[in-house]
Every structure is written in C-alpha cells, then in structure tokens.
Image (cartoon, rainbow, N blue to C red; front, side, top):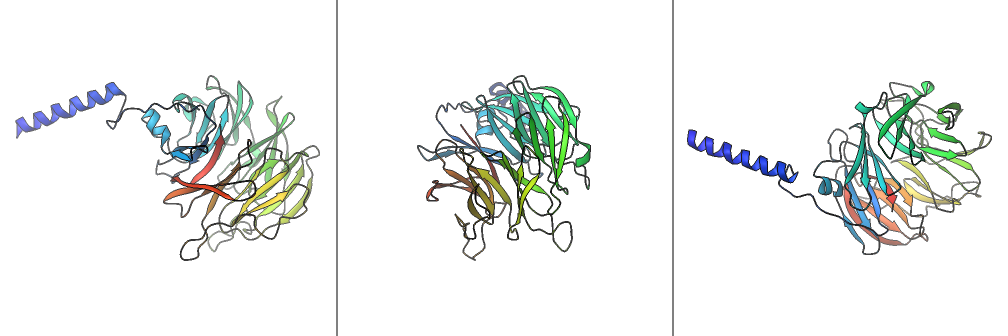
Length: 372
C-alpha cells in the first residue's frame, strides 16, 4: 500500500508541475484567439455567489458564437456576478460585482491586459458600471460603497474617489448607470431611492441631485438627441414580504440642462426586469417592460402595442427578457433572454424593423452587450 501511495503521490506531483508549466489548472492549454472583425461581446451575469459569470463573443457575419472565451483565453474564471461590459480603445472592461474586480480584456485576443481590485482602492466594494471621461480617467459606480471610484484605464491605477453621502439607504449605497452631458455625469441610484446624482467631472464632486418623487429605484437611463434624459424605474417592491414601493415602473423625461422633470408616465406592472436603450441617432427608444416597445423621442406616450413580444414557453409563461442594446453600426437590436435564470440564456438579434435575424445560446443570465 505504501508503494502504491508513493507512486500516486509522485504522479500527482508531476501532473501539477506540468500544469504549472503550461499555465493551466485543468490540463487544458490557453486558447489563442484573433478577432479583428466587428463582433459583439455578451456578458453573462451567472448566479449570485456561484462564481459562474462568463463572457461570449458573437460574429454576426458568420452567425457563430464562442462561449466561455475569458476562461478559455486566460485559464481562469471571470468571477462572481458579471455586472457590466464597456469597450474603450480596443479593451473590454468588465465589472464583476461580487468579486470586487474590474478586468481589462484585449478585444481581439481576449487576454487580460490589466485589472483593478477592491484591495487596490480605498472605497470600491462591488463595482457596477464604468464610464470613461478620457483615455486616462474613468468613473466606477458601486452597489454598497457611497463613493464613486476614479481610476486610470490605461494603467489600472487607482486615482481617488468621490463621496456621495446622500445615496445610502437600507444598507445600500447604490450608484448605477452613468450618462454624460457636457461636463456633468448623471448617475441613477437604484436601491431604495428615487435619486439621480449629478457629478461635476472638472471638480470630481457632487453638483446636485434630482428627486423623481413619484416612483422609486431608477433602473436604466439614456440621453437622447435633444439632450433629454430618459429614466426608467422599476417602482420598488410591492410583495407580501416587502412593501417598499408600488412595483409600478415609471418613465421620466428630464431636461439635462435645467435638470427639471418634464414628463412622467406610469407603465404596466412589471413582471420581469425593465431596461431602456437608444439607437445611434438617439432618436428612438427601446424599452423592455415584459415585452419590447419602440418609441420615438417626440412621442408623448409609450405605445400600447409592443414592437417585439417576449417568447413564451410551452406552458404559456413569458420568458424573462433581461437586457437590450442596439448595434450603433446598423441598428440591429440585441435582446438577452434569461429564460428562467438558471439555464443557459438566449440572445435574439432583430433587424431595426423587428424581424428576427438570429438566435443562439450563451451563458447564464446574459445581461449586457458591447459592440466592437
């Protein structure tokens, strides 16, 4: 038995050494990728506390998809709860919320170029979204920290932070999406608030806040061609166990110059998530509220009939549409379907006229797109 044990120990040791020499922990070589075309990155959030976030890459010309590209190219996992992906200067920046990390990934090779972790900063805890002010300065929002983190996206060096004390509520200090108008960045504060925070980027300081008042939890936000800020709330939670909010989403139009609310309309009760996207001309809005609605920025109300209906399963249950974005080059609409939040999600690609062009499977809970 001792001889057998010694042999097995030696075999395991040699295997470990070989794996270390190849940079692999599972015996697989890191794959080499070279994608110079105009593809689409898809971030798959995964399940909270499961560490199963993944990254997919889709080529619309060949209609092919490569799943799990981060792990395949780098022989490591992306992390726990991939929140957002943003492309800037040939690098895909991915905020992985529960892992407290921002990855910088080469957009052609999918190899890691750099990273920023919570331990490298003073206040970053759960990074949510990234907004680039220049090649050397970017903001990061956070789920729990009442600070906006500032870092250099070229060097991945921490620069500083901006305190946002008013946003803290019920244990959260949620700052989310960022939209820029002139020198000001507007930030929606999702968890348990009705706030839009305004940051002066020249001073790196809070310049004011906007209270929505009639609805809670601004979830998604875009700026249109007339410099109107469109904000979509999810309304809070209206369940038996949590009576916060009324669970009725609202769509707001805010003038970015005067910061005044110009319009407020209640939508149908939400059964899934709510999201808003805008085309490259910034004259057409696409809204997920169960189904998908298309609305011109001159229209006064969201249309009654959906532009694209959400798929239904064999039992008649509506799929959970989880994300939406519009390809700025050709107007194709990409929709992320979480299905049931536990199995591989589905991506639907529609033409600007709403015709289905393609659909394919990706990772669990796809929630974001970045167009190369």
